[in-house]
Image 1: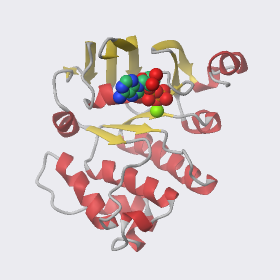
Image 2: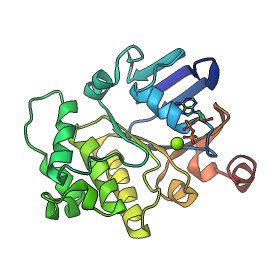
Image 3: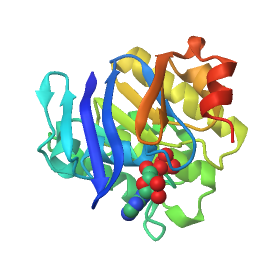
Image 4: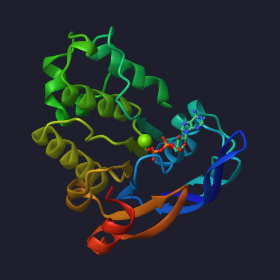
Length: 231
Ligand SMILES: Nc1ncnc2c1ncn2[C@@H]1O[C@H](COP(=O)(O)OP(=O)(O)O)[C@@H](O)[C@H]1O
Ligand SMILES: [Mg+2]
């Protein structure tokens, strides 16, 4: 489980996040939604330690990880799939996946077979350069790279952005499989509400740096969507 308590963040003097409180349960997919620019990516970067919070606490299970830098949070069990995928275009698929081994605590030197079971297309393309993959394949690679680190908590920033529908479905099923059979916690920023409703369990809506609604995804109403999400 991942818990965020009274988290705040500012760029210089400009406050971006204010008093965020969230609980992301093990075995569930938690979706963070909200319009562009409300602070979703900033929140994820505070959770994984790429940005330093100005106040508040991030807990992994009971452990306070707020003072750990990003690499130690990765070792503690946080995996990150950034917005825009951020794979290494000149490295091969296999080399991209190897980067994920850095986040492991054991000395494992090989890419676990389960990555290729979850994303068979990566197996066919191990020697292909990351930059030559389609957008959907790059997204699978980016998720695969995070999973190589064997995370307890997988944090994804808009994984369906610019991806074709059949791969979106596949990604959704992989995430559900991770929470249902491997006890992973999934936290996902998502603009695509059909995906939230189909694959998410819980939601938080953000507006201007704050959480303004939360609940289970089946309680996400048209009124909330109109008020806080439609442009
Ligand atoms: N490096 C930065 N310096 C200053 N302000 C930034 C920086 N990056 C993002 N912001 C601002 O922080 C706010 C939240 O951005 P972001 O977290 O990317 O929103 P979202 O992911 O919800 O679209 C926006 O108003 C954005 O302009
Ligand atoms: Mg964003």
